[in-house]
Image 1 (cartoon, rainbow, N blue to C red):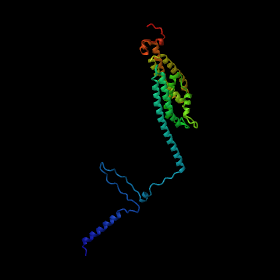
Image 2 (cartoon, one colour):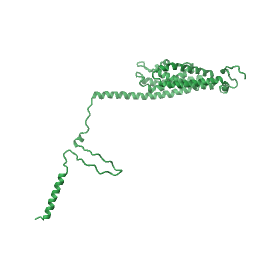
Image 3 (spheres, helix red, strand yellow):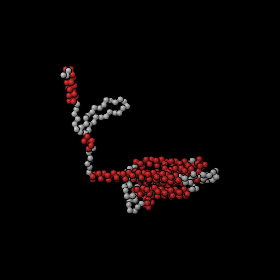
Image 4 (cartoon, one colour):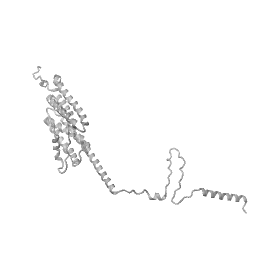
Length: 311
């Protein structure tokens, strides 16, 4: 016989196992038990993972396949291709515009080396450099913009065109004393264009902006000519810049987008005033400028109306 104390212990063990089996959750096929998060980790340990529940069938299936219209995808792909090509062309135009600006400034600096003894030599070199700008850099603009909307990409190349107009008009004035017209500039670019497509033509706005910048270079040229004794040439420059400013004051109010032009007109007025003040100072106080204006052996006092001045 089994002792009574052992029977009680055996019955208690059976009841405890039955209670634990009823309290434990039953795992169904294809399901993952929801497990509580572990206790908070100390500082510096890995962050807590969020509670997640997933089925084996959903994990095996993967993300649902997207359904789209092939015609719509093709349409948007075409638009993306056009925009990418336009952005690439804009970047090439910006690069060409920078090259035009840099080399046009070199032409302008070359012209400022002009003097009474080397005028022909300096102008000849400046014209050759300007022709190289047209062939090597303006030609890139012509090839990129043939048959396209010039105004759409104007902001990418306008500054280079303005600098080229400034250099070209400065060379023309130093050589002939006249203003290079827009039609003459565009005619010189036709040789670079393909006759089968619409050629690049510099618009009137970029031309006028370049002419407005010309006044600053002519002001520097006039000051340099005064210091070299060519007062009459400085007066000619003064009259030329004054005429340009007067004509532009009549044109600017007719322009639609004239904010940039108004700023240039303010600078242009300052250049006119500087040239006039320099010429006036030489005319009124010419005797103070004699050491700077020429030789002490045979000074020329005709610039202030006293050719027979008593020495």
